[in-house]
Image (cartoon, rainbow, N blue to C red; front, side, top):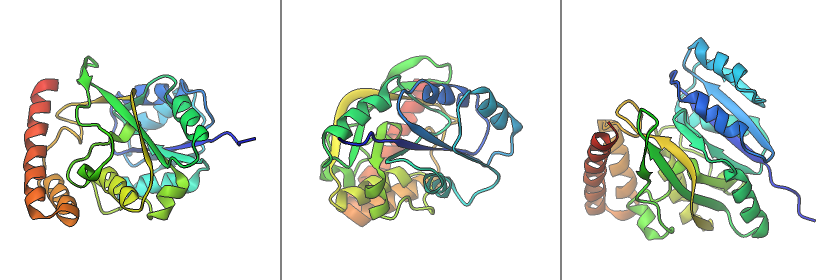
Length: 250
């Protein structure tokens, strides 16, 4: 008889946003065995108050400074048990039943290392505005474009540990960098054409911002794996796409 797979989620928080209440609620609604690590570097008491009010049991909590968001996520994964790893930011929420669907699929096929799906987008007023339009089946396109939506991606712990976890020096593309290293290492991805999460898009969110560091991280990642011409195209495409999304979700 196959043991039931368990999940481990890290929640890195750098500042208070009211949306964290919905993030917690979306985890509370899941029906699988779930260990939760809260990594709070905000220094804002409202985070602790929201955690206490959520009704969640946190396997690990740290309120205090950290090296980086990526380092915080890895810290959480190290400190809690769980066969399948993922993380949610404070503007991400899981759909009801999301983890149960992933659990069923992974338990049915031990050769699958990662499951990923689509995400719905909402604006700052929590109004729906379509879904992630760049998610598709994994191929070498991953070296030029991040075709995996982070809050809807769930990876076996063994696969993540095999590639050394997240790069703590990356602030914007640590998810994309992880997918690329998993893919290059031969990890088997399974694309699920369903909506498993929702993401708040807006100018104040990290995903909605354009900074030199974000563009440089994109250029460097793509240049490493696909060369300078692809890196230039991907960086320009990212900037144009982000500006368009900011106008759309304003």
